[in-house]
Image (cartoon, rainbow, N blue to C red):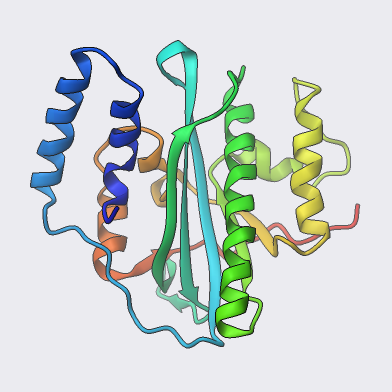
Length: 228
């Protein structure tokens, strides 16, 4: 409950019912011991100076029965962006994270990323309701994905997808933007995709650094709301 970096390993173990589960447990315990000083740190943020940022990612057909794993990281950050010559980042605290199977078998990486994004945005909208009650203010909600084809489809009038049933899901995401439920979306490189470590068991130095220092790298080029 305090180790987002172990979320995917726990999800994988929970879905295994053979001797393999014991091997996975040993690997997860080894990671837990290796990074035993990793924990959640909460820093002061002004109640009127807050933004919700959510990173979502997916690994296509990497789980048993060709299931895909999705991950999301929700962080409350300061509105103040800190910049140097190469990066933009902000101070933030982890509010919630999720690592789970996508409910249906999907036929492409795009489909997995889209469904993961929809679940993540729903989680962000739901969490924002609590923040509104706590602070009596409505923070902006930003969503980040490393799937370029997905974020580009949100900027176009004509949606270009191979699976026709996914058009409804893309339209649902665009509706979130149009209705201002989602402030903006942006593509981010995999190197700063904090949801990546929630979709597969992997070394996650970028996530460990963010958890330790409370500094989260963000993209400043966003997909604005559109009425098209």
